[in-house]
Length: 277
Image 1: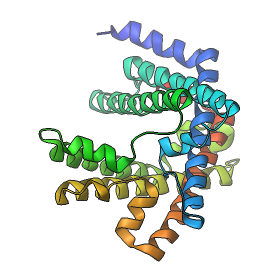
Image 2 (image 1 turned 90 degrees about the horizontal axis):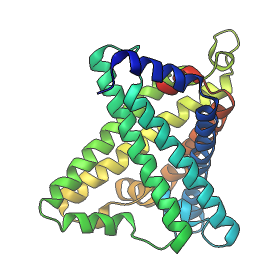
Image 3 (image 1 turned 90 degrees about the vertical axis):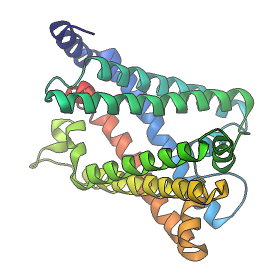
Image 4 (image 1 turned 45 degrees about the vertical axis):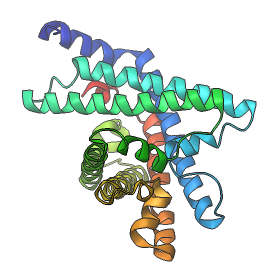
């Protein structure tokens, strides 16, 4: 356990670290571009059905076709690794301005974000090395459901994913992301309305997409049918049917594109104080 005084000093050092700030910016650029790529893949699958999936892995696989794409994947993996380091620092020494219960929750959230970026870093590295082949979400779900208590694990994951989605949508609705931006972008007098709108639409839409995927995972567990799980495109098609599902994919893809653009704007207007709080 880090002593409180030492922890506070480490937090201040992290906030003042130019190296950490630029590493976070690089990671956020990659994360924003990934959302734009997922949105593009989703719309492309609606307009011209073919191979691919509107998932993080499916989007990264789009880059694996040539050497330059594989180099980009390695760069993305490095960016995601930087985001992992950032969240581990925040989990270890951050959020001292919160009450103790809230600090614990925030640090657990940082660990969850770190786990997400570990997955993306590993996936980007794997795709760069072996190409875009790999399990689809439905086959991965089937594999987990074959484990002892696998059905319950899939259902629990679905509930957690849906809960995270509700949290993100609420966060966006309440414009809780303003503290992530510097004073120029968040002040009421000088607030850049387009950035705030991109963030609000992006967070809400991403939250809705996660809720949909979470519901589909629970449904797959309930019916013992892993084919009901999948990426953004398959999930909305399963819930809403053909025409309405395709329209929903386009709408959600546009929202994910907004989230990607917000992340790129956040790179320009990064609030250094928000790195550990």
